[in-house]
Image 1: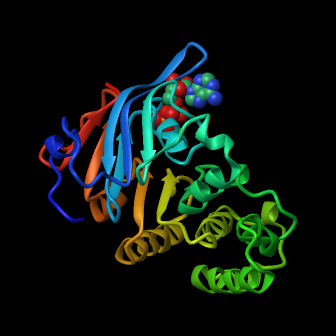
Image 2 (image 1 turned 135 degrees about the vertical axis):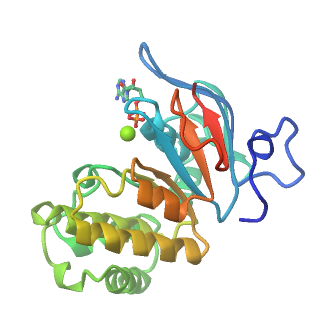
Length: 249
Ligand SMILES: Nc1ncnc2c1ncn2[C@@H]1O[C@H](COP(=O)(O)OP(=O)(O)O)[C@@H](O)[C@H]1O
Ligand SMILES: [Mg+2]
């Protein structure tokens, strides 16, 4: 983190000379009649580790989907690294691919993310979409399998794996793209104690390696260990003495 965040510095009335990596202004989104994001202003800088906290249904998952370009603003703007992400700009497949390479999403439900016949194919999928040479694809599969300690799962079918194994594979898939930003939706939900402590350690390493992390969680230890600042979503009131911004109230 390059500076101490305060609600004021995050809700910059006048954008600083150096724009944030992630910049939402007056971002609004509704699913048919259900309003999910209301006039959200948010800045996240490269290298920040941000924890989203809020009650069920407060809009955390919708915000993460917006950041990774799965949904688009119906009002307001989202800029990633200075470039506007919206329905129109995402029609440019080169632009969309580049965004998906730079900002990865680890779904709460790993089954929603894994669809290939083998773990190896699953991890190779993103790099192949990027049209990397096959040798480089294989190198990335090897590296991420080693990093996530899943070499013995390479030939397995993802849908047969345990919840913890699926989570490792889902993370490997995202890391094989070498993204700058990782968005994780309730990453510890449903994991056993051993996998949880492994994942906490792993997220600390990613933070130490300079990755930008945006994590929705209800988990206190994750929040305490990783958050440079909090984003309180909806009516949620957390620890008012910690660096935070409040959105979507
Ligand atoms: N696919 C969807 N269709 C309709 N409403 C949805 C959909 N996804 C989420 N919502 C609604 O949007 C609001 C925010 O949901 P969500 O972002 O999933 O919250 P959280 O992740 O904080 O639990 C909720 O009211 C929820 O019911
Ligand atoms: Mg959610």
